[in-house]
Image (cartoon, rainbow, N blue to C red; front, side, top):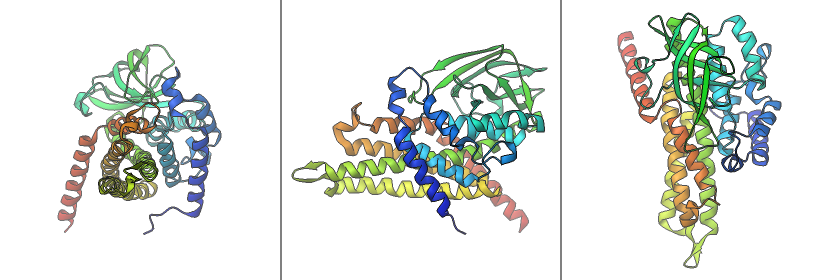
Length: 372
């Protein structure tokens, strides 16, 4: 089994990296008033990246999930301040997984072209997400309740909302520009990826799929998004390692590069090992995602846990390697730490994904025992 990228995918990676190095400027969003880089988003959409893994007949480019993983890694490496993960990994995947023929026909091309920005609204405050914590409710075709924090909820046009309906958890499409919707920005550690509080007061809501299957579909979407976010985290971790290494080779103390000191070598070796472990798990997740393998839930949880650890460690050690300079606004080290902390909580925190990994492994072992 070959987990490596093809020559075409390596070419896509190189092109994406050059483009993002020239155009992605997260610092400008942090220092400005815009919640995301609109110009970069338009360029990304012109390149067709949002529709990478979507078939051509549904408005996409017709490539594979592995190609999308390649792009995700570069977006993470560049800390691209665009709503790519919310709109593509989550909203588009939810519509693709559960939407009716009409819903797919209307919404998929709009999301794949960037004409509309989507988001996934599930959490209703602090704590792990489960069916019992969801209080938002749909009566008839109207939704009422609150969701917070919602990544890119302040700029999205369309939301996929998890809500109760007839005692079940369903997924519902809500037009965030329509009546009955109030939005309020929420501060986060990384303002280059904005969040919002969404309040629904009998807002029109359209059922996505079967209400009885809502929670199962949501978990499937989260598994797919987890793999793609893991690639973003691997990309960020790799860039932190490279920046720390470059600084250590060029920063002199006591007449020698600090890279020659054992303490620095050990730090960077730990980051390298964590990053490569996360990369291996992410590659396994990419294979499972691309092939629709039964191992996807396990692979997604493993990738998520390993990538969380790698990116957080890499961002922290990058600052430590830079010493006093690493804590200053002028250096980019804090940008990566911000993004690492933010992504560590996306789709649920590390404990949530550890529990999912253990649960999936237990189920697999039970099934194997019964089959024997």
